[in-house]
Image (cartoon, rainbow, N blue to C red; front, side, top):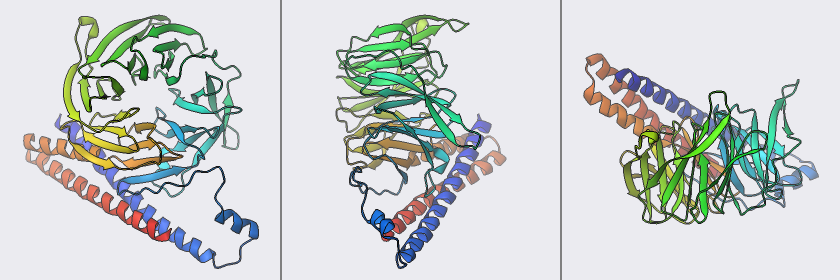
Length: 443
């Protein structure tokens, strides 16, 4: 136990130092770049180039100004509101889709750079409203708004090293049902899910054949998703519970059945949304009753074990709000309207609030797989935040371990890790604040 905490502490300190160094470098590069741009404006410019700099593209919405000490990046490429986000299972990429007929693939290692590399997949004669990576990160599926179906895109690499997107020649069978709520690909690669507001969830094989149909009996669905482990499908709607099913397959991969696993009951009115931890052992729910709840879902439901309610806390909510749980389950984030709040799952206390993050209602909210970043979308910009509450949570864990350390060597190592982590966290705030100041002055 002590060695695992020391390892976690070392990883934390290392990650924080990388973030701080990158943020400081970002500030310096931004300052130099801005100065260069100002110097260049004194020189003669080609008329066409000058016009292009002065007049923004006609199809872009006015940029929404937002600044915060924990804002790591603003990803800008879409010219319409971003409706969905998804991280690849290898943690290297973030996918975003919008009504501009494109799906963008961003490199997560570039979040702290001034230039954010991305790839663009065109959605011909339609646009995607939802996007999800395949388990091997070599493909993604998208829900087509006009076609009312799932389309598969494969990501290939050409001889010159460039990437190419190839759409499957055959889309899934059209589903002219009520509004789509969500889609998903099981991490096991065994099935794909589509969920609709009319309480229908369809379980598909990878070839587009329906394996099972679930009627959730929740009046109208507000959210549904597949658990990160790939075993479960869950949903919530105009009822006070979250229902969870297991999608069962045989040892040779053949589909068997969908069975009811367990329910999360405890809210006094309908549940807006929920999220899983990376190991699927924790879930969080948020309800119209103005509370969020943390659950222990690591149970043997076949032995009639029920999930355990671990914590209940109050939060600001609004219809359509979204919730996210960090992969390590230390931090919960919830959106309300245009704003986002972050809570400690250990204490239930509010730790960070970001007001008016987007000019539109927050549509999606996710942590990256390393628990370093929180990303959200609402307008045409994707915001990336440092997960400072997550860093503070690990520091608190190390402080608790320090009280139980059995040797002087362990004491010294933990104390040094705590000092390094606290110093790095303080420098992160200073570095991002310095960057924001430079960026503002140069606008």
